[in-house]
Amino acid sequence: MRIAIETSASTEGKGAIAYCSEYLIKHLAAMDRENEYFIFGFFFSDFANKVRSLNLPDQNNIHAAIRRVPERWVRRLEWNWKLPLIETCLLPRVDIYHCPSHRLPLIRKAKCVATFNGLVFDVLAENAQTLLRYPSQKPFLDQMLGYQEPMSQMNRQAIERAHKIIAISHSLKGELVRYYGIQDEKVEVIHPGILHEVFHPIDDRTRLESARRRLKLPEKFIATAGPAGIHRNFETLLEAMRILWNQNKLAEYSVVMAGRKNEYFNQHLEPLMRQWSIRDKIVATGHLASHEDLAAIYNLASVVVYPSLYESFGFVPIEAMACGTPAITSNAACIPEIVGDAAVLLKDPLNAQELSQHIWTLTQNTDARRLFAQKGPIRAQMFSWSQTAQKTLHLYRKLAAC
Image (cartoon, rainbow, N blue to C red):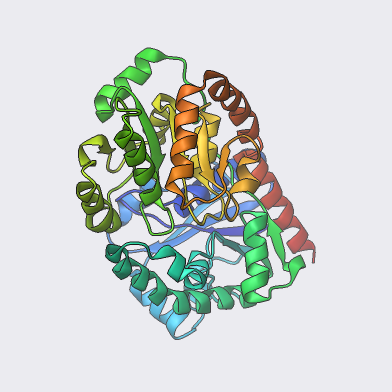
């Protein structure tokens, strides 16, 4: 088979989809030397650096098919005007075309696979009034609601064009059926993996203390991670900690928020922290240079809290669990499917009082901490990139045989 896998590149740090594509390609290369893989992408500015950032395996059956074309031209011709520019002019001849997102081009001479990574805009549109709890959230909610219709159109187009859809959780598969009426048999659930060589319990205290100094982390802290957004519900974590601090509990603890500071953080969360007089208790790391830095934060944290209202997989809690750190997360969307009984699930992720009680319990109860420290890494072993690649290759073979 000749298989094209679409990829993207950025010199400002990769997003989750780009990382997932990289790890899938790496593990497909490790297990499959029979089929030919063409790693396809298109970009123009800073071309050489972006190509280097792809980290493609150096292997005879892995070929770079990266085209230096302005992205805006491709978007206009391929998706706005619906002209098959990619297949006609940019793509080598292939049997399978795998797009790692819902932006599937018009491919007529190959079997197409599209990976759906979430339906956050559809879910937000349905639950908009529940999400809006602070006036400063409204511009961000309005912005996201504005994306819902064009994203929905692109989803429908991908569903129509694809021969198979990969959903990254069973929960997401159910949402695809519910929102888009897609046939059950057209959707294959393939969970992504996590990097077990990075996210694991670290016993080297010298290494951890070095990371603490470099990242300017406090001695004791509760951690969360990921880009802030209205559905991530970091407000409830901040409110829960404020409740504890006001009760003179966990005074020695700070909150570490790992990840890039975006507009939502700067224009909504940070003013909220100042309004609540807790800004000096919050450490926002900004962009982290590596996954190893994030793993160090998970290992140094007493508890990782991720009260998100919507996830289609939920990397943060499962990565923290892989590190042996107790996690508190939401009983929402896919999260129970991923974490099982190896994390504390919030009955109501908007209830700061409930969250504060769980944080207090896990910081004070050694037996509870030990239990989750044991169960977490075992649960995390269920999600590996080698397994993801194996299931994806099996899907390619089934499609090619049709």
